[in-house]
Amino acid sequence: MKTKLTGKLKAKKVTAPQAKAFSVHLLTASGSFLAFLSVVAASDGRYTAMWWWLGLALFVDGIDGPIARKLEVKYVLPNWSGELLDSIIDYVTYVLIPAFALYQSGFMGTNLSFISGAIIVVSSAIYYADTGMKTKENFFKGFPVVWNMVVFMLFIVRPGEWVAFGTVVASAILSFLPINFLHPVRVVRLRPLNLTIFLLWCAFGVIALYYMLDAPLWVRIGISVTGLYIYFIGAIMQLFPSLGREAALAKARKLVEKQQKSGEAP
Image (spheres, rainbow, N blue to C red):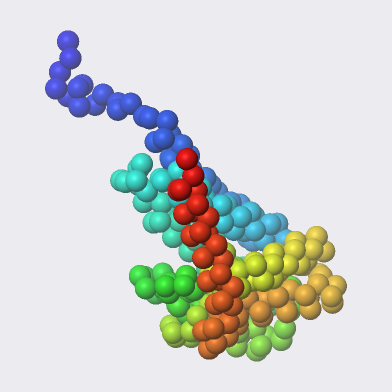
């Protein structure tokens, strides 16, 4: 005999769209396991393995958003916040683990490495609380605390300890200044060029990992040049707002015309 309690506990039927939507959350959550593997590797001093795991986490972070928007996850599962889940994992993979690796490796010396790690985790936590970190053009307002990229470059290029420390301090300060930083995919202006440079940076990173972070000079130069471009191009485009605008507007007009033609088609 059914009671009111058993009736309430009866499982609701899961629809196919809900199952697909939840699988996207599982994909995002897999980043936490990749983060765990990277922490284990860093604790053992296996930094090449750590960066491989963080690179894979970066790849997952890059694909889960477009999939979620395509499947309309936010509307299919309104009680589950993919944004919150993503932010939690991003803080761990973009901030906490790179800061830990910086301290654990000690290549800036014990004191500076510890201070750098502290600066990274505290400034980034405050930055994540900023709800206005994006501009209308999808630039980041302030350095977007992508410490995984910055610390990765420090591991490869190996500048002097004071240069590395200055980079950390300057980037932390820039997190709170109204200076644009690039999102290589979402910013429309100069997107083909920006995306190409970003992919080149990734390629140099993979090559550096192949060399177990002891990369030859040409790799260190390549990742430095592409990395500096990614770091500064947002501010340059902010300073010159017409840069790449005509091409972006032309592309937008073509897209509108294409949509209008498809709408007129029988």
